[in-house]
Length: 288
Image (cartoon, rainbow, N blue to C red; front, side, top):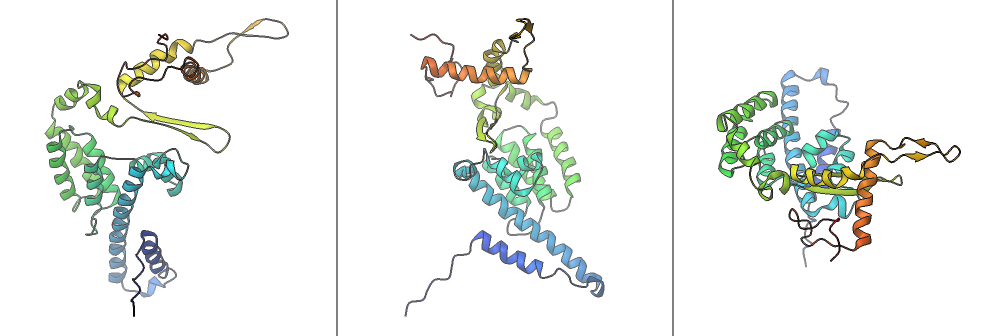
């Protein structure tokens, strides 16, 4: 007789079962319970929140790698999807749902106490923010990570943030390392390595455009767009009098971007380097 395998537990199933157990405690007459029981309940709730935060970080990290929010759910990014799902502020959504380097994701996992139940999501966010202020050298950030994760076991998020600021002053007192990093070639910079651009439907007949890039990328974009944003006077169809351009600066910049893209399509000039390097292609380069 064959033995049917037990169903594989899913994150949704495990969490749903935990939610059912927690919900069963609502409505209890707490006034009749001893204080020690209430204190123990609050302590265990912190462990539960830490374990849930650690699981959430693991799931989000994999969803970021797969780009599920954009590829399968129709959202512009994981941050957009998570912010909507959690009903969070944009800042909270960025902190929790954005893609991070593997070391930073590991810090989230350690700080939230994966398998140990220590730490909190707020402490994890503080640690990630503190590490981002340190020099990018791996040995420096690993050292800072160890200190912050250890301190998370005894400090609240406010005091942990002070430790993070102190670490930045100790490990890079004059800011020399960060200045050196700013002078590196753009291909090695964090801003360039984390560049992105998303264009997504807003569900109301329009689109949303979001992005991030380096200072050099911004200079190139401004150099290409600004000459096209000059106001263009309109003409009154009745009096033929010249009127000011009804578009504000934002509208003129948008029109310049769309016009630039349309020019590239009309002239059939595909980029040589797929946008990977500076100067590989310009939409204004005359055809050969």
